[in-house]
Length: 104
Image (cartoon, rainbow, N blue to C red):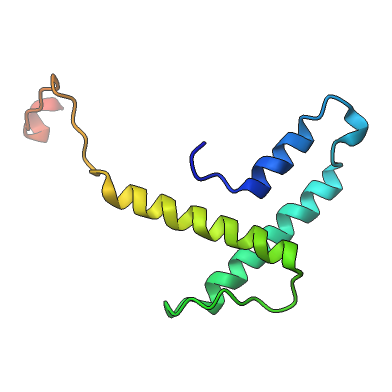
């Protein structure tokens, strides 16, 4: 899927490893996803004023890189959604408005 963070793709591939012993355990998955969620939440809390600092304290470089991948993917998704029309009607659709009493 377009703009999916690489760290997420890598984790998904590990989960699909043909050798089950190479797959992460549910505990490992929970820890990884919780850390990503914590860092991303902290990032948005720190940057809620719009002055993006890319600074979250107490995380290692790998976690910081992962967090930034998610932030960039989120920004790309927001931009993509802003560029697409919200209302996309079907060319052959036919709409009429009626009073609710006519339907009931």
